[in-house]
Structure formats: C-alpha cells, structure tokens
Length: 107
Length: 395
Image (cartoon, rainbow over all chains, first blue to last red):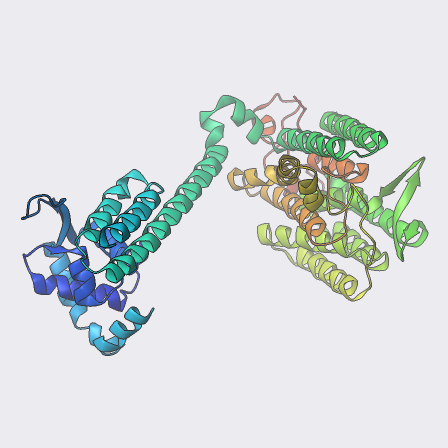
C-alpha cells in the first residue's frame, strides 16, 4: 500500500519552527497562535495532524495559579524536531515569512 | 462584559464539539480552555470563531470518512459475501436472481409512488402486469437450457430490425416515432429490445451482432431518440472498458455518432405525468415517496455491482447491463424520458427483466447440477460453434 505524501504548507512549517525554538519547553495554543500569527482555525487542525503523526506531544497541565482550568500543552517529539529541522530550510523557498504571515492573518 | 463574551464563545465551542468523534473531543476541550486565557474580548471572539471553524471542519471530515468507510464495508461485504454470508452469497453471486429481486422491488416502489400520487389505477395494473410477464419470461429463459448463444448475433440483428421498423412505421408523437400499439397500451420498443441487445452482444460480440448494433444506432437516430441513443452508447462504452475489441469499438463509434446526431435534432416531447420527471415530482408528493423512487431507481444498477467479484467472462455483460440501466435513469433525470420501473410504463419493466434473464447465471452455473451447469467463459469463447447460452435455473 502506498502512502500519499503531501507537501507541507507554510503555516505548518512556521508552527514547526516555533515549536523547535521552544525546545523542551511546553507551549499552549493561544501562545502558538500569537507567535506564528496562524489563526486558531488553522492552528488546531495542524496540531491534531502533527500529534497523530507522532511529531507532537500533547498533555494536560495543571495551572500554576489556583482556580484556573488545566491547559493543553504541546512540544515536539524527537521525530518532530528532525522534521522541523528538515523543513526549516524550505520555509524561505515559498517566500518570506512575513508574506505568508500576512496572508494567513488576512485570510 | 468580558465574562459574557467568554461564556458565549465557550458555549458556542462546547455545542460544536458535540459533533466531533470522541477521539477528538479532548481537542475541543483544549480550545475551550485556551479561550479562558485570552484577556481581550475581540481576540477571544476571533480565537473562538477560528476554533469553531476548525471543529466544524473536523466534524464534517470525520463524518465523511465514516460514511466512506461504511460504503466501502458494504461493497466489500457484497463482494466477499460468497464466502461469509450464506443467504447473501446465493443472491449476490447470482446476478439474474439479484436482478429479479431488484426489479420487483423497484416496481413495488414505483407502484407505491403512483398510489400516493393518485395515478389512475390502470397505470398500476399495467406495471404489475408487465412485472408478471417479465418474471414469467425470466423463468422461461432460465429453463431454456438449449438456447444457443451462438445465435445471439442473429437475434441482435432481428431486434435491431424491429427497432428500425418502429422508426418508420411506429406510432409517432411530436416528431418522434418510438412506439407500437399493443391493444390499449403503447410500448416503447427501444426500452424493451435495447437492453436485451446490449446484454446479448456483450456476451458474444461477433461481427453479426456488431452489424445489429449499427442498425440499432441508425434506428435510434432516425426515430430520433436522444435518451436511448445515449443508452446504447453508454452500454457499448461500458462493454468496451470491460472487454476492448475492434468490433465493440466499431459498434460504440456508431452509437456515439447516432447519439451526436440526436443531440442536434429537436427533441421536445412534453413531460407525461407519472412517466417523466418522476425522480423530481415524487418529492412533491412526500419526501419519503421521493426517497422510495430514488431507491428504486438505484436498485436497477445493483446487479452490476457484483461485476467486481466476477470473472472476466461474466464482467462484460454485467457492466454493459449496468451502463445501460444507469444511463436510462440518468436520461430520466436530465430530460423528459421515461423513468424506468418506478414510473408508469410496462416497456422498461419488460426490458429490465428480459435483460436480467439473459445475464450470466452466476453461482448456480459453477456449482449447480450438471444439467444447469455452464462452463465459465463459455459464452465469450473464441470458438463460434462451441458455446451455448446455458442460463441457470431460477430458484
């Protein structure tokens, strides 16, 4: 059985780059959306796909301040870091980051 | 204000997340919790709107995937039922029997529609009578073990000539000459003979049969009958896909030319109640009646679905049959052409059951008694004198 491999989109590459920058530190959804300028409607399907493919770890974390609900946090797995490094070189190929960020923010 | 906006956005997300499959519900919860961390109302609303879009997209994708998986499972179950489900095995492995059941169900659904729509009782009687006649023919053909497939080509030519004669001497209406009068009933000859010709030709596409197909194409161009010319072309193209040959290609080209000719000829017959546009008007009676009519029309192609599990010898006839009846239904959906079996008209009922009766018998052939057993592939053998049309005994 052959597996269809899709080319990665620029928002996906930017998300990987941001998560790679974070290293071992856990990131949250709103923080990722703010740092990458990817809208939540695009961000969460990307996170779900990366997690399903084994590139992303996700876990519920208890809040530091009391009275707050637990939050879902994310970081790359080892495979995710390898993928992010491989894709990092391609990010510029599709145009400057500012371009896609602008498009994404405007969409 | 801030609390109100957050609560509203959160409620929206919670409601939408109910649509998600359980494996994705933690993600909807994650979005909802994240919302609580956004201090700015505008940003929170934007974030919630994006999440809502994501949740709805994911829910739709999940539903489509589950529908696709269910459809695949159904098809696989039908195809592999030969080994797994004894009852389904016997039916799906025998296209003739399956066709008879599908035809009878479609007629029953059509009668229910006509009853609900207030059609004259005579219409119901005509369809019922055609069903009885067709079933009798089905039974008789099943028992005619001595019918010779070697003579199929001549039969195709004879039927094509009947079609041609109808073009010149048949009953005409609005410039189209397609019918013959049998007592109080007008029969559309092409709806009876064309499906039979296609199945016979698909089982034995010889030179004589090809000549018959060309005559049929000419007859449909002369009538003119756009729908049936399209049906002939569709049936022959399906045959060409299943068993490419120069003869089948010649017949298909002739049919396409005839179809092209009918496209430029005027074809302005008005819609007849209970005959044409039934696929749409049934919904005006009641949505359930509409669904019944659509289901009945879809059932007509079911015998063709078993083609996937059949050998190369049986597949051409099943695919030509499927191409033929599917295109009759499509024509009925696109224009003022008779809606087969679910609408008023005995011709389609007879044509369907006769063409079903001539389909390869299926399991019974392979595993039945010596008297009813036919050799696999015998009907498309290269030796023109050897094969016989040995149709399986009906149940």
